[in-house]
Length: 230
Image 1 (cartoon, rainbow, N blue to C red):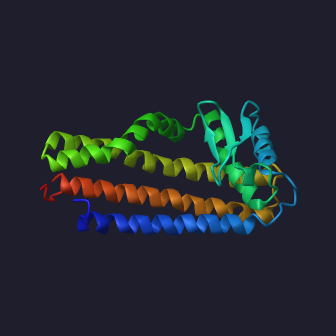
Image 2 (cartoon, rainbow, N blue to C red):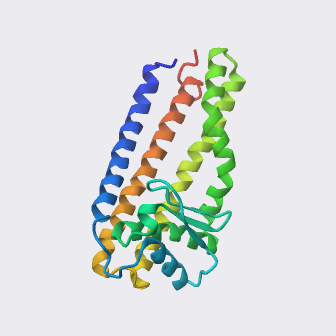
């Protein structure tokens, strides 16, 4: 089963798409990391200005280790930026920082998909770790209850990846609009600052496609889509 041709047939396209999207994101970020914004604002300053322009003053902004490890934690209301973003005045840094600030605005405006994604995090962390193991054990020992449980758990991970798409798209849309209106970048710089966000969004699309294809494999092997289960 571990070398199942059907699994490889379904998994490989998602893996290839993910590699392409990741490469595009890193390439685009590196390209515009060399271009300094005319405002001279760093990523942290840009995020703070964007939030303040919308009356948001209670979000903490701090530096976190890692490359493109930037994220917004809705539980602590903290925006964490990687070193390449936090202190850099580049268009790439500003684009990423404002995108994460977009998530903070989503929380402040009670954007429903963000709330749904946040609620799914605990279950998704569990299902991502154990769904495949449970499915394999059930498949090997022909225990349909475990097979179905594995499918159900992995379905949560798929749901999470799908819900993530509108959340990420909306955060980028907010960033692209407000980074200009708040005077963070000029209209001429907007496209370049947003280019890295467009590339990054494709990584979420790739993750969703990969998750859906894996779920299809599970369903086929469980006999829930007309496939064999032996």
